[in-house]
Image (cartoon, rainbow, N blue to C red; front, side, top):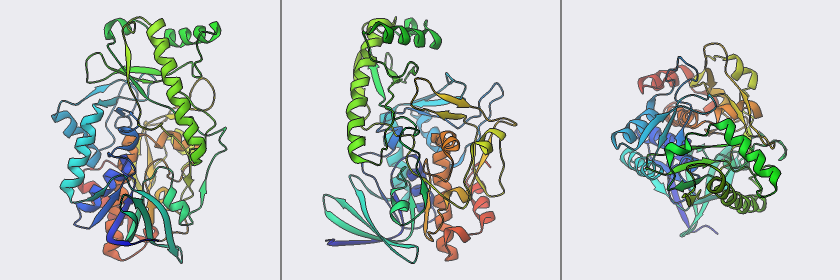
Length: 425
């Protein structure tokens, strides 16, 4: 039984890359916004999961160019002023990444959210929705205060799993667990001799993994993966763990995935220490706060972005973000499937892919956008999730001003306001 009631103009559910940008965008328009987050920090996969690099800001290839601006680029600039990030080429040709200090990003996110006037709630879970005639009336959240009903005019679902949109009645797709992208537990090693470690290239590392598995001395599900330097001397981030066949919306399956992910992190750390030059004196200093989830629900929106759209570099009249990131499909096998954007190297994410069918006052942003399995494996990159968040936030402000639903707003006005905010379209 709920004992507390809060009201706000816009409720943003999920404080990851998309949610942070959405909340800032709404608040900067002078509206009241509450941002709820289940963890004790902002950033989601960019912080709590340990993914310490923004991908998607630049197109891949020799002639790279930046294709994401706006609030996401402000965040990068703040990190740069703190000397807390640097640009780094990607091992697989996905374009230049921006590697940052995870702890500094937590602070930057909090500063920008609070400066904008957002009301922030940590350790808070959305547990129930109340709808009427395809319109979300309220969301019940749980935290140390018990159950609280939050009533808003418009809602932005940035949970990653489309939890709110799905519970409110939005149609969605979800691949069979055997086809969903694998989960990964990020881990960090310290006391690595970086120069020595760099003498072994990626192909040689993969070969050593295969040999280690064949010897029977190690259990390495993924004979692939990578490590990279961080802003901290001698500390590297490792993305090697692969936990396949998991539907992360199943709490029991997700729990067992967390257990398996940490087990694998220990095994990969042992392998690196015992088999790879430069890692002889290394030791594990951290695993991610929660396992990294690449794919669960994908809403069925006004438009479903396809892998064909991605590969051919499709452009849309209702564009709200650009993406040049390749399809990066972490399937259940030992390797990863890649497919690259052709043409001029980037495609548009259309506004319609953020708007769930059947719901009037709910929009999504982030990896739960309306896209096929293959297209989502490209559009889920961090810079694009951030850009989608900003677009969703501005769209919410327009909805309130025009007193309309998300599917009926003036998209040209949305694009004009985004361009005024230095978004690149």
